[in-house]
Image 1 (tube, helix red, strand yellow):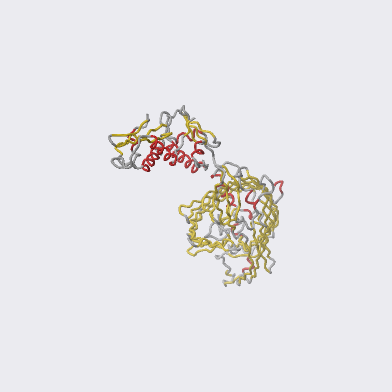
Image 2 (tube, helix red, strand yellow):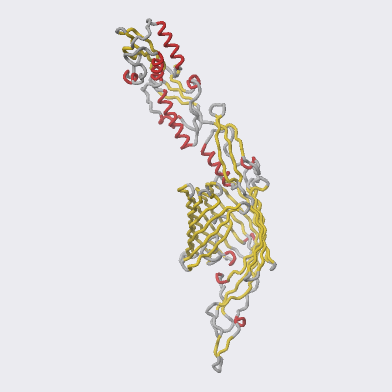
Length: 611
């Protein structure tokens, strides 16, 4: 087997000096009158002579010039050997380069690859059967193949490096013209994690599907990095490959910067209109004791015996199969709701002389627990099931008179008299209490891409079904179907376009507290909470998010919302807002929404993005 090697320059110098000494005696200063090529069969002499640029005809012999031209001919890539020697010629000398051409190619034989097939590599080779093998062209073609498989497949083919002898073990051509190539995909050596202060190493290691000793797949590495970003525990994740002393093996260094994830809030607020004092306390830790568990605890209370309580715990890795567990306990009041949107929520007055209409304000309380179990079907698709027990209390408070009501009338004598508004009030509905238990099934597909704390690309889809009542207990038997799709795209470094489309449908006998509502900071930002309700709902939200360069904690937003509950009347809102990330408080959301019906903006405040 003939190995394709470059002859080192030092060897060429020694060989040339040996030939000079063993050939005709050459006096110093003897003139070079001609340069010729011998031994070539397929490669044209004119092409070879173009590489001879250092020897000068008509000038004295320069041995360094001969060595340089010898190397230049060798670098053409067509030859297994290049030998210079001198002959007397017309009173001077003639320098002759005797070349030995590489064999003509008959076929390629590629070994060593596992994920890439030889048939995928062959199209990159410009040299076809019958061509004189050129190792320079071969190396350039391999570089193109390496670049392609790196960018398109995420696989690294280590470049040929080392001594000529080491390279010859990887690329050879035998006397029959068979080109033997030994190519391998790069493999992963050690994985090292740096920058973890609170987070335990196993929390990030268990998310890595790329293992030590595996073929190094950059696409898998990118997805592993994004999966770690989806944990929302780190403000920055930087994977870095580091060469090792072992050929074709790269170590991976994962550098983390942990974010300020713990959120703590405590405060007191006073509303002079209704003389209400409200206190609040809350703490959220998405990385409890560095174990990747989430714990959230929030309370709100006031002297009027209104108490809101929320406790949530999530364990993302309950077992080796990545079963997740979620537990939520809650007791929440929603105050001063109007019966206007309820079925039969508008009442006529007692006094038959008037056609007065009344609605009532009521408080709603929901207390219960929710238990969720989930398991991945693949890297991005997750199946979950949940069971909820909920106690609902509807507590009517006071009547609200319609603005067009009248209370004056003429008596039999023709005199005007006025009745007291309270005397016209209907009988206030009684307090209601009932159970609303349910079993839920859901699918989630997550391909969102994060840059720090911001969602900048990708998409997320979810589908679900909730079965209420029946064998699970409860006052009402009904089913709720829902779906959501959201997607993000960043055309510029700090600019993100995002939209969300969601819909729900309720079948069966539905309590008013479980109707589908539109309005408020989580749906239509220009309208009040529960502005309109129905048994079906479609909502779309569009946002243009602009992060401020050199102020990464600040983001400006333009938004447009549209929704309907009957496909006849559509509600629109639009506006501006901004987001601000504060350590220990998280992201604060401020939105100002307008509607076509009102020229005044509605202010919305919330924690975190709407979608």
